[in-house]
Image 1: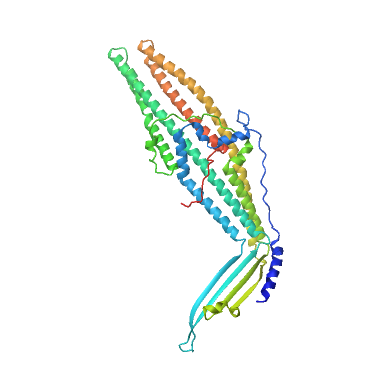
Image 2 (image 1 turned 30 degrees about the horizontal axis):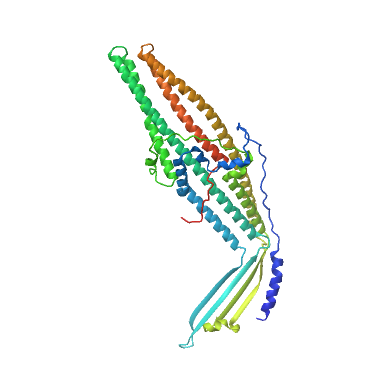
Length: 474
């Protein structure tokens, strides 16, 4: 026991030297990419950076309280979000496990036995034993530090994956809500138009009775009304499916929102334009791009960890044990034994396994780099596509509104002329058919404008900005 103070001093002197080793392998450097200073399909000037905060909770720009409510319920109850939260908890636990690899490991043991030895008659004795085993791997070449670095980057990527899931969820809820309202509006239009066409058919039958119309005109009038009414079942089916999707997105059974969505409400229309910023903003606003970059950092740390495995490892190990025939004997100096010392493991021949593991890690790093580049290009493509789709759909909508107004005038005029006997019934049928088609196309265009607005918000990286806790297990 007299050697313990001297040993402690030697350990205290040696530890700084042993721990102060070198970390091998590549250090992560964030990749650089050269981007255009503005969007190709953006007619407006690039938004000022401070305006990009308006991308957060962009759906409030529709001014629809029910949509706001459904999005909040979806964030709270969606199962994809619950899965992403669990993955965050898993990644954080992996990081805590990696931290444990940097710390000493201590195990305790103890036994108590009753022993009867052969040839000693009825003599029975007791034996007690206790001990401690300790080990500490000195991270001379940074293998454990790199494992911690990789786990940290993995946890950050899981956080970004959660935000990417929220971004997708919010967009899906808004899209299905807009489409459901659009289908309601189209059903209402079809029903109103069919009623008007039925009145025209009644007028034709009345004229048929007095001999001023033919049976062909009456049949065509009934056929046109029936054709319009035939569009309603498909619209009703599509509306039900959109409501089912909304219900599932909020984490409930498909029919849960049927009553809530039954009342007819206007098609949501964006009240303000989204700030598009510049292409470089996408790199920090899109959570999927951020996650891809974090995984590149994670795979780079894994390469360094595999590189460190090619170098020797040094551990400090120690044991302390005590035995006695009585519990009180365990604390006596004469019953205590101890040992300590360094242990060195040097990879001499591994059949190429360690080198292959490093090469595999490098290949995985290259895959992560390609994946990050692909995510950047995809994000830029999403924005450009959404910009041009929204701009062109607005132009289309204005033309359809003009066409609808003209067809309405033509339908009213042709009906008046037909009543006065100045035109044929064929003109009335053609005008009413064209009016219905134009008004239905206009409604579809209004839905498309709102859906393209949602797509642009998603492409730019706008989404849920409030804190989302992932600490609670399901």
